[in-house]
Image (tube, rainbow, N blue to C red; front, side):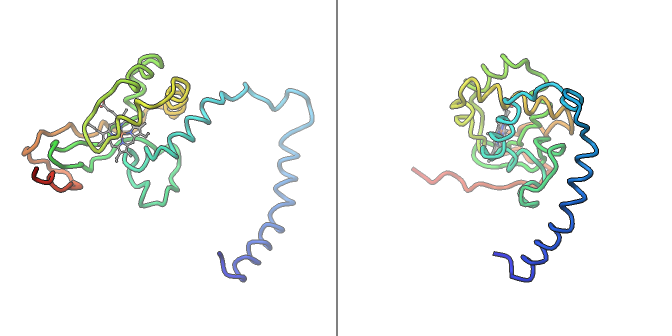
Length: 175
Ligand code: HEC
C-alpha cells in the first residue's frame, strides 16, 4: 500500500490530468459514425498476448524482462537470449520466437506446438497442452509483433565449452 502522501498526490495528479485528457480524446474522435473505427481487432491476438504473459514465456525468451519486473515494451518481447541454460543436457538458449514463428504457417505452428519435445528448461509439455485455439492465439500475437532481433546462439552438447554467460543447473542426483 502506498503511503498516504503518495496516494493523495496520485489523486491530485489524476484530477489534474483527467479533464484535459478527456477533452483531447473528444477532439480526436469526431462523432461521425464509422469515422474512427478501423477493422475489428482479432480477439485471438489479445488472447495470445494474455497467454504469453501468464505462460511466463517472456521470463526466459525476453532479454531483461525479469530484471525490469515485466515492464518492457511489447516490441522487445520474445527476441531470444544469449544466456545459456547449462545442465546434463548441454547448453540451451531460449529461441528467438519472433523469428521462429515467422518461419512457420499458422497450421504448421499448431502442429509443432502440440507435438514438440525439446530440451530443458523449456517446458515443451506446456506447449503440447495448448488447445488448438490457444495455439492459434499465440501464433497470431507473436506473428503480429513482427520479426526482430538476432537468432539465439546454437545448442551446445554436454561438455562443449560456450563463450556466453550461463545459468548452471546442478548435475542430476546419483541414482
Ligand atoms: C524456463 C525458461 C523458459 C520458459 C519459461 C519458456 N521457454 Fe521456450 N525455450 C527455452 C529454452 C532454453 C529453449 C531452447 C530449447 C532447446 O534448445 O532444446 C526454448 C525453446 C522454445 C521454442 C523453440 C523450440 C525449438 O524447436 O527450437 C519455442 C517455440 C518456445 N521455447 C516457446 C515457448 C513459449 C510459447 C513459452 C511460454 C508458454 C516458453 N517457451 C517458455 C526456455 C524457456
